[in-house]
Length: 564
Image 1 (cartoon, rainbow, N blue to C red):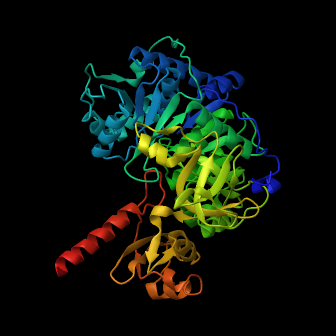
Image 2: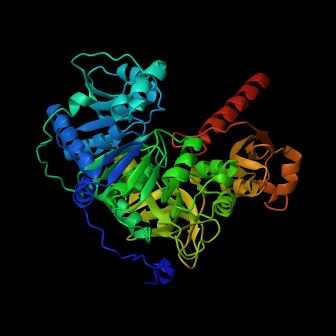
């Protein structure tokens, strides 16, 4: 098919036209519990759960949710770190017919309130931790949030950690209220595990409302159907050539409330009967220790995670030979980070690409075969990538031409929750407008240039931050970098780079500028370089421009006010 240039060199062992069936997401639990009942599916800090045990707990949670009034379409929030209760509640809500709404533990009260009110979340599952419980309890006012289900770390930790946790972590445990608006997680699952069957239409019934900034504006709830999520898990399974059902161990250090980990860690691992080595959060030392001792075969991560591993002095002493594949997503993977990691670890690291609105993965580099430098790869099975004129989203561009990337496929959302205008603007004739600028080469490989909203206009010239960041990453003293546009009286905008140095390294701005002079154009050169000990990151651990942009805008406004 000439219109699909990627087909000529599609990865060996992967069929682009593979059959993708539409099923309720609970099928991943049912199938693996039937096929691998005694295999461990979760290892949470040493406490193991088998697939048989997980299946029973999901049924009991579903029955418990139904007794609380959950029916088809009821929104139930998960305000949890990575823990067994997250997995049990997620699939329990879906089996009860409800819709999961994931909440970040890092959200402020104002962000939580907006998402609760916008989604109409009626019940939230949380834990009795000081970082979670007081914040969410303050929002429990019956409109619409009327009920909390509160779990504990003790109930899912192995002995003796279950005994030591309340003694050693007493300051971290919140004092809960016991009233009609609150029950424990233990009470939720205290039943015979016989939920009422719910007739689900995978294509049309929403499984998850996943909040995102989308391509514009305030956070919106992307409506991901059962079929969207099940398709993306199948697509990832097809992509991972050589993965064996019932044999893999998945590193679970990325937060499940983020769609990347939800799909590529949790859902994929359960689909293939894998074991999730679950961590409440990413801790470099703990993750490296688990890689060495528990020998995961699949390690998904974000670029900052692999950059941190690159900098670890422990790396030469660790055995990483169990790892088959490392997959990076959530943010652009700098070429230098990829090359350093592969050289130090001897593990294959490939970059994938997607959005919350695509459940999330749409494109990935082949695990075997050609990995083109700086490319995000080729479309996953049944996925179509096209490039359109950003100013005229109906005009398709040719190979090699830069424009806005559009995605079509079974993993593309049905729209934004209660946002018909945003939905109409983002979805065009079944195509998702990503808001990302890129191009496709003659072989069907996709190259991402940058976000439309991050484009810097320097004296009328387009500057893409990623181009400058890639050049800066080539310097061996650089660990992390963020490039943004700052206001400039003469040129409209100028380039500013924020740099975190690698441990033990030294670098000054003039030396870095000299290094860059042979690598980027004059209009792309940073006007300012600021070195910092830490750079801001999002809830999933990827570098975040937002805070730095706000800082620079505030500085500019203050200067303007002082000279007015």
